[in-house]
Image 1 (spheres, rainbow, N blue to C red):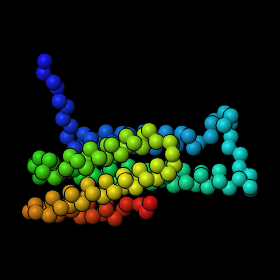
Image 2: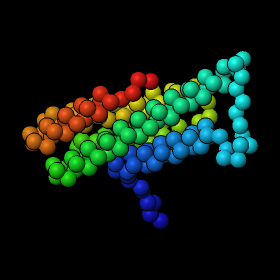
Image 3: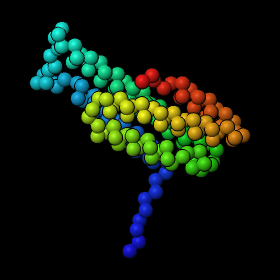
Image 4: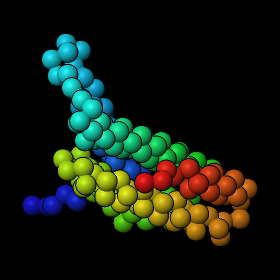
Length: 165
């Protein structure tokens, strides 16, 4: 009996990671919003500053996740432009290891409950996305094509848009 091996392209891993991140964001947003019926009201007093601080931390995480989702979407767009404009196989530009690592980080984020772990995962996610941008820029340096120059500039703008974590 033959064994079927599933081979995913780096962009498929990244697309899967994007979907996972969107689910994480929507799950966190749903948890942080009070119920429409008012049954799950969060009562905060002056003495209970930890609840208010936690809410601020949750909002900050949501903001960072949203920014990183936007960055990943921009990276995917750039990769599509590379594949269509330069007519080259993206495998020469993308390292599967980074895409697999990205997907694995997003899977971890989807199952974590600890706030400390979530913060570490956000830093890992940002580091991985930065590494992907670096790899793309490095790969484009040797390509003598006007699209490669413009794409490198776009990637530099993406790199500068990473949030502080």
